[in-house]
Image (cartoon, rainbow, N blue to C red):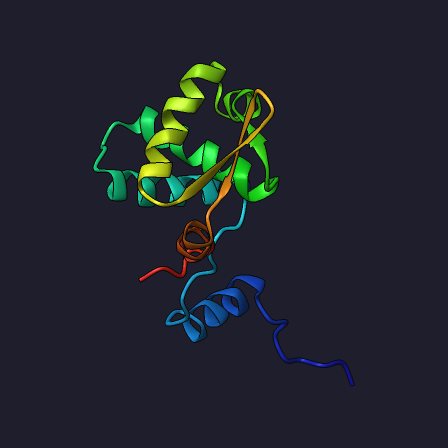
Length: 130
């Protein structure tokens, strides 16, 4: 005898699953763009800037330093779409905030995130900062 029960509806199953999980916190996006957006918001708030271009620049520099520990001004500039001199000015602001450290290697200036900078940036990048 053939089964006379109706076949389940994919839409109803999907809707039932959505209702069952509606109180769950949505996952945090970990794409480079999402991370940089969170970094830009956090750094902009910390440095008191609302300018979206400046926030984007700060985020790109922070992201570059997360990806590669030691960065020259030229490398930071390339990551943020700036000249080396402009990148140095931005980096100087982050140094004043205690987020970066600067070292000189002969005539080359290299930056890295400070320990405090790493500790502050990680939860913001992960989307877990409170």
